[in-house]
Amino acid sequence: VMFSGGQKTATGAAGALVAILLISLCYAPNRTMVCLNMFYAIFTSACIYVEWRVFSPMLNFVVLFYGAFVGIHAIFDVYQDTVRRTVLRSDAYACYEQCPCCLPRCVGIQWAILNMVLQLAAIWIAMVQLSDECENAGWWECMNGVWGNNDLWNVDELQQTFENWIHW
Image (cartoon, rainbow, N blue to C red; front, side, top):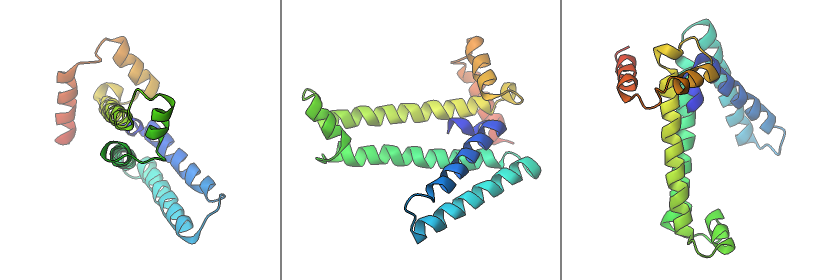
């Protein structure tokens, strides 16, 4: 999610995804996985082409969708396997066996809270990258500029940027 804010960072994230999808075809592929990986690799590559040659900011939204989908699935998976029920083969139960003072559900709640905080932080970073101040800056320059100017918690400016983006 956090790499969806800028054109260069979204291209890097999408390019890495395409590379990983193609590399994963070398490891025990079956027909379904080959079709899915090829579809997403071709679709994401087409989005990269459209982003740089035809229309921008299409790739930002595609990478944001991928990241948000994976993040929400991770939160749901942690909830299902650790908070809602205790699975004896889960990582939370393994943590409980190593440190019996923290029950598996407590470990699951901690992981779910951490997942949600990281997802919200990534959304905030993406919104900062979509702001006018970061338009032509790289990811590191944009983040360094935000933190260097002590504007980290400038909620009014972020809300104004979000409202401008919605009315675009």
